[in-house]
Length: 387
Image 1 (tube, rainbow, N blue to C red):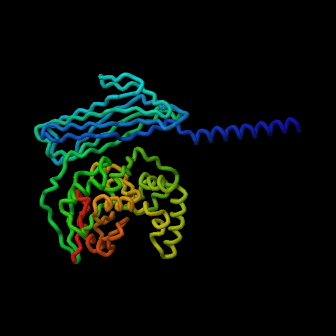
Image 2 (cartoon, helix red, strand yellow):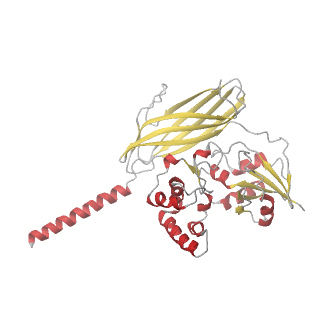
Image 3 (cartoon, rainbow, N blue to C red):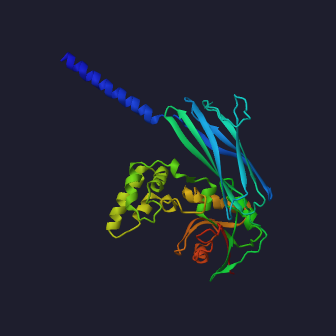
């Protein structure tokens, strides 16, 4: 009996020890590195030379672990309306570590980001050519590797930089609807370097009159907020990889990465519950239950190919706190505002609007999708209700 008791005790200790190790592993945050964008300065005044200078911040938020960055390099892709023959580009990364000398030979030596510390990498981009007027955007990809308790993990940081800005004084054509006038307004390709208030001040203010309503598409707002992810950074789990087969092929949730982006926002249990509950509701004659149960973000995910290049390579979520966005626009510009989701199927969904906006007016004005659903690059539409 004593031997048997010792055996049971040792077995129990082994199980508890294994559980403790597994729990520590699952809770471990090794290789955690927060990569964010610092200030950018874009000098695009000369037609034959563009200079873009920015910063990348590598931060370790952990108090108990260090993270090594043994590799870091950059790659630039330019998008243009015409051929890129004769256009040259260079990208230079320079590390400015707080505890190491700055190198001038473009070599990235393995660096340790210490506990609760950060380092800064400056990025210098030069684009040259006899005529750069057809260039539209630069897509910068910074490839880096984290090395730590979770092994060697390759990652990519994406930065989209506009290279063309429309003339804010150009003549634009108003369109007539039954109860309103609508004006699609072109902008540069919006990025997370922008903010909605600045966009309204720059592009809308020259055309606005008292009583007008500025509407902005939900996807551009989400892009400004940085709510997009490359599929290489999305890791589908059990729920997403199984349930994605049950959505229509045209749905943004019909791929494992598209559905996983929703799982990462609302959690796997809510998605699973919404799927089961929505299935029952559909059998009982009430379709669309999944989207009601899964929450607002379920309808707003745009999978790969869902928007303009280079964002067509990303999964774009819906905007965060759209009501706060429109309230800020109203407070800082004095213009009534709404964030909308409009398509060519005559579906108009208003995600948020300032208190003085009529929903019926927006529905009537936007029903024919004046912003377009292709590459018009008119994310802003000004609505002028008729008196």
